[in-house]
Length: 95
Image (cartoon, rainbow, N blue to C red):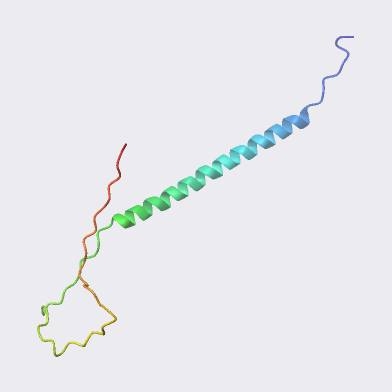
């Protein structure tokens, strides 16, 4: 009567539950790995940006004063100043 019914077979649900839990955990581990890799890339990029610029080499003879030996510049092209320019770092505001 009361105890004569058999226990339902729920092993399929148990296997499905374990499969879903395993997939969710694998996705979480993959997400952590990708975040860590991107963080390492960002850190190396920031370290590269933070490096000081190499010093500019100047000639030992000094500036030339004679304009006869210098080639003429074309009016359309400008060579510009080739000296080093100061770069300032922007700071992040903390709110």
